Length: 226
Image (tube, rainbow, N blue to C red; front, side):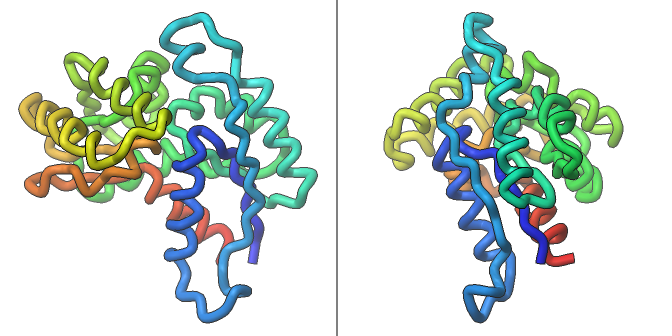
C-alpha cells in the first residue's frame, strides 16, 4: 500500500475530517488495512484569505513548498492538500518535489461532469472566486460556475468555523446561502471549502451536491490501494 502525504492545517478540523473519511473509505478488518498517511498539520500556513482577499498577508507559497519537501523526505509517495483556496499555490507545491500531486480541483470538476452537472453553485471562500482556482478545471469540462451575488455572509460562516463556533448555529445560515444559489439557477451545489464540509447535512435535499473533500478522499484511496 502506498503512503500519501497531506498538506494540512487549512483548517485543522478539515484535515481531521479528511482522515476520518479515509478511515471509512476502506473495508478494514485490522489496523494494517488502513491507508498510510503522513500528515503535516500546520495551522501556521499564512492566511489565504489575507493574501488573496485583503492583499496584506504573507505569501503562503514558500511555506507550502517546504511542507511538500518535508513530506517527501518523510516517505510520502504522493501529495494531497485538503484546502480548495490553497490550490491557487498548487504550482509551487508541484514544483517542490517529484511526487505526483492529487489535485482536488481537477478531481472535483471531473466528478461533476460525470454526474451531468451543468450550472454549479459554489459554496466557497471569496478567495476561491477571486483567485479563479476553479476556472480552468470547470472550463475543461464545460461547467458553468455560479457564485453568490454577495459572498460576504458565506465568508462570515467560514470564519466562524475557524473560530470554533458551534455548527448547530451555523447550519441554518449555510442553508440560506445554498438556497440563494438555487434561486440564481444552480442545478448542482459544490461544497468547495473544507470548513463547510463539516456541515453538508445542512444542504437542501432538492438538488444534488458534491463535496470536493469527498473527491479527494476517493483519489487518495485509489492511489494508496492501487
